[in-house]
Length: 398
Length: 81
Image (tube, rainbow over all chains, first blue to last red; front, side, top):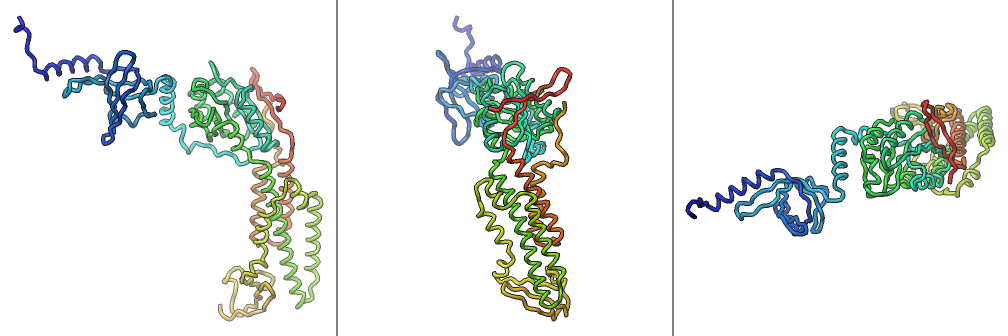
């Protein structure tokens, strides 16, 4: 009887198993726990076992596909893999040939996130050329966030501390749950329509991937991309990245950080203005002083009275301008503790005497300072000004 | 309502500071004629004063934006915390 059954070679059996198995499980998704994970160093292929309570299956992920992984698998990790069953004929074993793998738990949302991210990236929504520059000194800050959340509280606290003078316009929104994404998108559109802010901060405090989900939806991405106002995203904690972060013109790690990035500290701004004011004052005084010196010198050789008179009038005008503005160095410095050193040094570097003391010479012809050799011709009478006196000279070549 | 537009006479802080920096730069170069340097001085002092005053406006103003069904915008006061 046994003779009626065909005798097969090992290869033939294996070939039949292969055909059955590979044909029957062409494309499967499989979930299980990773164990015996090894990445073969020279080849880069990954070998591991997927198991559940009662069974196990060998798995392999070839190097060419390893590049698409967004995480590093480890023993004990629960994953979902896509692939096909394959028979390894040499040893008569079967295994799953893994095309892609996601950590379980972040499963569906994570997949949706990756898909949308790839699609929007390929459309160019994240491209640098579409980023709107962030204004240096916004005076009107728009905020799109939950009216009751910690994010708004943090933003207002930091804005108030750094620069209470900025105006804040809040467009309250639902930041999670059904309809939240649509609400956020509408809010961004409305901020643009209203056009009463220089910049818009899109904020939400920390939460799970599900909590932050509205910021990963396409309607929000599209409205950020459409916005003519620069958008700063400040969603979740530092480690949370949302689609909104990629489309936004700037990403801040947290709402507090957004306020720090957007608004400069009042004290340092006052310093900048004070330095500029001081330099203006000193530059003009030094121009006047140079003029005075020059005229004084002219007076030695000529009988000139009018220019010195003009000069006195100008000095007086400066005093009057200062008085009418109600400003003085002392007053400005008193506004916010003095940091005189930095601009003191800057002023000193402007003092022409200091330059002359370093060995430079200033050349003047008539009333004008000569700043180019092309202005001089043979026979011109010029003056060489040293830090300690002037020498009249004549150009002998030219 | 529409957004409160800036008073055109009142320049933005950014613009004022930029102009102030230009003035300082030109004055530092030192070849501005005297009469003009005094005009620039006056302008610079005015700008500084406007900037400082703007910065020293003390209280934080927070408004809440709402759009009604007819599509008009309204700003409501929000009590700063």
